[in-house]
Each structure stands twice: as structure tokens, then as C-alpha cells.
Amino acid sequence: MDFYYLPGSAPCRAVQMTAAAVGVELNLKLTNLMAGEHMKPEFLKLNPQHCVPTLVDGDFSLWESRAIMIYLVDRYAKGEKLYPKDPQKRAVVNQRLYFDMGTLYQRFGDYYYPQIFEGAAANSENYRKIGEALEFLEVFLHDQQFVAGGNCLTLADLSVLATLTTFEVAGYDFSGYKSVHEWYGRIQKVALGADINREWAEAARQFFEKVKAPAQ
Image (tube, rainbow, N blue to C red; front, side, top):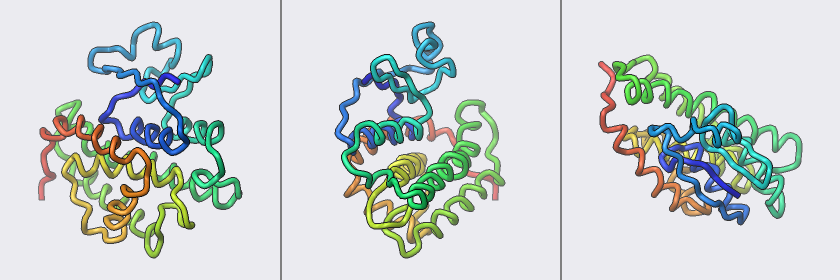
């Protein structure tokens, strides 16, 4: 399977960890967005939205990281721990995946990415919203070993792990969220591919160096 990716991207790293968890080897296709490689005609044929990550499995192509993660599990996983079939357990995993996409990672991006890519000023309200998202995650993890509860790692853990690794590389201190901080340290010891996730995340560090703290 061809995997078009950028190492600093949290969504790309979440897919990488999922592939490791299900035992699938990815044929890595580093895609330089700055050089416009995602806008080449051959890439647009695979993904008209011209974004990464993009997975190509034979004549089938798919993008959006969480959709790719679910596809890898549905097609290649042995067992159902990563993405349980029980409707209620799966619903919680889905909710956490959507929370990561639409709240946790989204709010991180709302604060950091305008500064990195547009030269915008730091927005204190957007910074506050990151803390609010972490408070929600703190509630999810209270007295829980895993993001979606239960007794085993799921796709929700891998998605949030990738996001929080980007938080760490960006210099955002979330150690004050006790349950989140403890989970973050613990999950890296059990998630296959966590070492590569951490290694790839370092590629983004250079971009966060230009980000300023919000005005107090």
C-alpha cells in the first residue's frame, strides 16, 4: 500500500501507528506540500482534495486519517480490540475520534497554524479554547486507562496520541491535566509505532519556533 504523508502531520502519524497495530507495512511516499507535490495531476487523480494522508491500496484510494484508520482495521486487523464491533463501544470510539478531529486537534490548529502559515498574531481566545478541549479530555480519562474507556487500546488512543505528541513538540505544556499527562506517558509504552510517531513529530518542531505566546 502506498502512503502519501508528511512526517510532522499528526493525522499521518495516527495512520502510521494504526498500520503498525494491524501489521500492515506502508510504502512511504513523502509528499512535499511546500513544493506543490500534492497539486500534481497524478496526485489529484488519487485525491481531488489534494491532502495528506492519502492511502492507495491497489486501485482504491482513501484520504482523511480517521477514515483510513478504520479502513485498515476493518480490512486487516485480527480481532476487534482496536475498533470494537459492539455498537455502543464503537460509538464511544467514534465520538472520541470526532472529538479529536473537531475539537482537540482543531483548536490546536486554530491557534498555531494561522501564526505559522499566515503570520497572524497570537489569539488569546483560541489559546483558551485549547485548554477547554484538554479539560474535556481530562474528564474522559478520569479513572480510565484508555481514551474510550474499556480495558484495551483503541483507535481513539492512537489518534489522540498523535495529536498530543504535536502539542508536546509545539511546546504546549499539558502536564497540569493529571489524567491526560499520565495517560500520555503510559500509552506510549503500549502503542505499536509510538517511537516512530515521536521521531516523525520532530519534523514539525522548526515550524512552531515562530509561534508566540498569547498576550496576558
